Image (cartoon, rainbow, N blue to C red; front, side, top):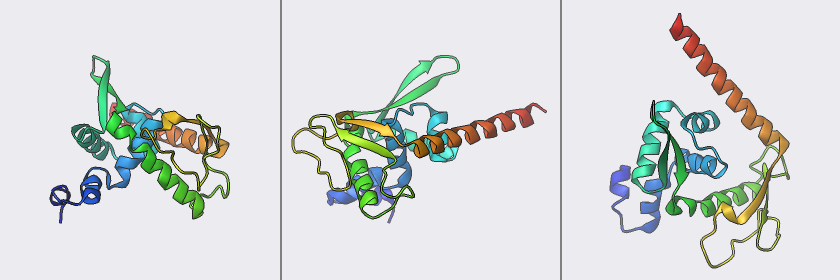
Length: 174
């Protein structure tokens, strides 16, 4: 059964999974929530191929999860932003983070890669924190600080990515 058939199911979970049921969509949404907006930054941090990233961004735009905004006219270049529909996936990402914290999915051990505090109450958001009732939760509701090791990991990914791009350009120029 393909995603198109699943999207036509009467099951809300199946329909939702037809839009966000792969790791790339959620990783892209995570990167957007962390401020990565441009194609190369998204590619550097996720490791996704340029073809797959382009395809995924187009589908996410068609599904109303993201919007693109022109930041350079010649050549046309875009930044990507979560729509209100896409921002509501922040709660899904937070739930995955909590599950990972509870089940030891982090090589950091007990330290989260991003320390989070709920702005409204000052509560630390750990693996057992519950999203309050009311308006939909988004990462706009938290204060966050990145663990040094995660910051270094992200910087290393970006550096390796940009080195590969430079090597490709140099090879093409020869």
